[in-house]
Image 1 (tube, one colour):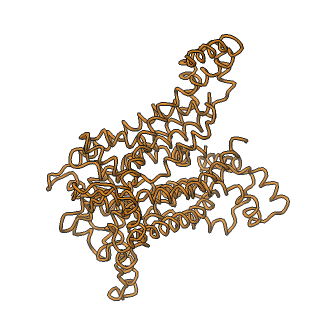
Image 2 (cartoon, rainbow over the protein chains, first blue to last red; image 1 turned 135 degrees about the vertical axis):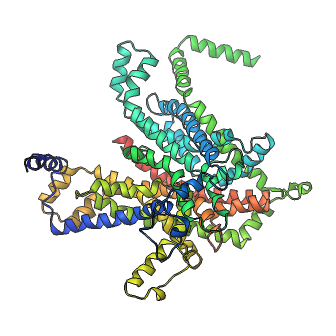
Image 3 (cartoon, rainbow over the protein chains, first blue to last red; image 1 turned 180 degrees about the vertical axis):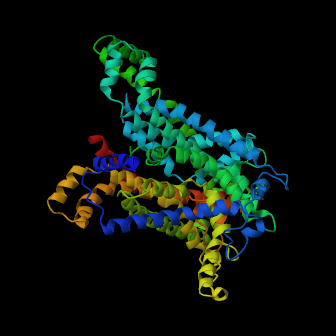
Length: 297
Length: 321
């Protein structure tokens, strides 16, 4: 009892502090809360269903109406990792990881200096440059695919992970420039001036003054670039084959087998999505900042 | 000779009154240097391929007939614009994009408004809402195609049978073949499921950046909930709605994964990215595929110009703030 009464005031005061205008919950507001729960459950349901199906045996997964309480098994996951087919997904998962991580690092290396030149010490007509970057994002990638394919064929870069790394870098660079610019624009000019008055050089200014302020921005940018690279299918599908194929390409080739495959497919879809889910859940706020190109802080 | 004089002149002016100007000029370059790697990289990797596409689009070039390569004039464009499949792909792309963006924006707005209130388990609902966006698109498309839409053992028909079974009529439950009977709608529903969280996140952030004191003042002055939404929340949200619509359109116009996975472009669901992929990947008609690409780019430029104007007006608001 005592713990209950002690625990009570804390959430009370928090809601009062963050939203002073809110009245006492009325009947209608409880109904709206319930509605939010219903919609939330509807949206998460397919993912939960995927999880449950992935843990069922193939014969239990293919029943109608569905068996909810069927015994759980890891057979689907074993099959995905090549238990009976011998086709391991590890090379493609590693390719995805390589392409996503290296392209994200390259994007940061290119975007941060560019964003610096568009915010802290802006070049003339910096808005035009910024909009040029955004406009490249609007051109459909599929329209440039053919020349890239022909070029890669000529210089023997087809089925090479480095080709994907370069393309993913170009795909994410405009987003990263926009995001990093909006984060760097938050750095107060007075702080930079104070640093230079105190005799700090460029390196010190960057590492000790600008760095701490924009670190969250760099994290948000990395998250978004990683997710988009990890998810990409079209380039990977056209430009890679057996050696450099990524996890999404592996997935598309997964359902060709005959017979029951539902549990296996659900297990595969979950495993491939896992890195994105972990990163996204761990950094929900960064996700919003990133998706809105840094417009929402 | 004149060149030398010119250079000499310039050097002289730099030494004299132009000292400050040259300082500014070298300052300009110092400012530009950090920008150049990113700018050059972007131009080389994203713009040069388009130039090449433009050149190829005027060529007669089919990989199966390598000896017949040559200048084709506007023939490829004529065949693209008169091709029924290509015209259908254009219409499909517009229909798909508009439907998905509009519905997910609307649903996202409803959910964001619900999540802007405090209620028990708000954080949990928010996390549940984000989940669809964190499923890799190919994986999500496979999930919808096989685990939900499948007419024999998919969840949707399973639920229908289960519900009918409650009334002892499991045998007469409707068991539609979702993808065959409503192919485009199937793709759209799966896309809406994945993109509503995106819209919700942006709109929720917009709602939470509202100046609460002003709204409180309005409430004290006797404004009703609907009035507050109509005259205060909505105008504030407008720029977030526009941002969501713009970013959503950029990604959904180019959607390839869902069409490729769920219907393989069949049953009238082939959108432009898929149609171009097909002419290039299956027909090996490089000239025509490029002409289609150029048509897409021109169309996109028209729409993007409008969109960019919206963003830049938003942007000016932001910088003037």
